[in-house]
Image 1 (cartoon, rainbow, N blue to C red):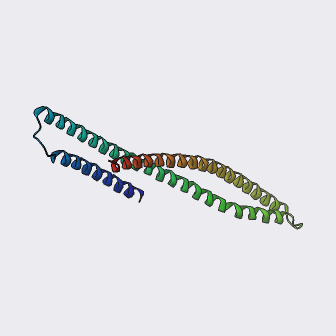
Image 2 (spheres, rainbow, N blue to C red):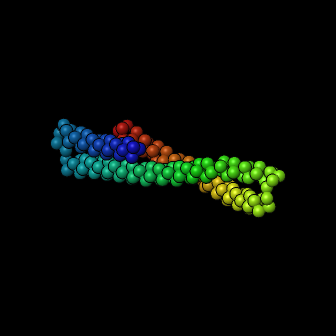
Length: 180
């Protein structure tokens, strides 16, 4: 949706450039008075060329800024998608911690039973050890994902800042064209 807004802005800027050029050409072509000499016609032609060059330059600048803004918008969207995926992974991993902790507590309570036979005790202790290893791995994954989340959040903020800068430059160009 952001791209369509920027595309619309580009079209408006392009139209403004074309209209401004047409107004200048029309204004220069409707001058009344005595017929200009060859030198004044040449000067008028040079002025017209300069005006057209300025309009073409402004149009090119607008096109470049819109293209850059669209690329930056894509970068923001990609980074936001990556950040969302990391957060989804963190949520999935965190949801597995509670059941593992509950199972470990049940096994520890089971180990406190006085009638527990030695083979059952060893099996429960082995299972607890595996659960602790799993929880350690889960905690490491979460730590890695949190670090990745922080990096992506910082990257997203930087990309959004660059997007805002391009947008501001496009606004400045729009004001310049509107002020003529």
